[in-house]
Image (tube, rainbow, N blue to C red; front, side, top):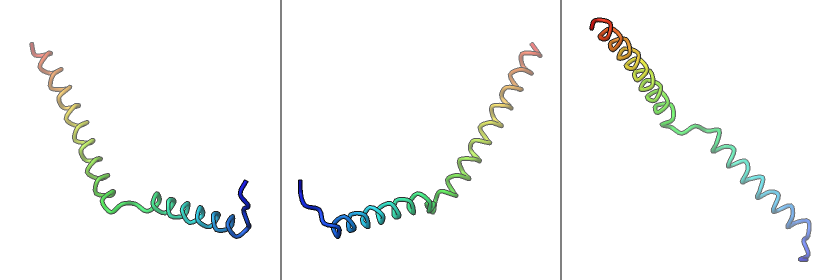
Amino acid sequence: MPNLNSSNIDSNKKKWLRLGVVGLALLLIPRRSSLKADSKLAANAENEVNNKVANKFTKEDESALK
């Protein structure tokens, strides 16, 4: 087994700590376009639901008229 001294262990701990902090920061900081993308996605979903509801009622009305 290789001889590990305490400075090497401390150095590894610091590297892993930095890597963890950077990774956490990247997860928490939103992308610039994410707000735009989320609002577009919500608007598209709302339009899709409205269209499906409108189409459903239109088809039911047409079948009732026949």
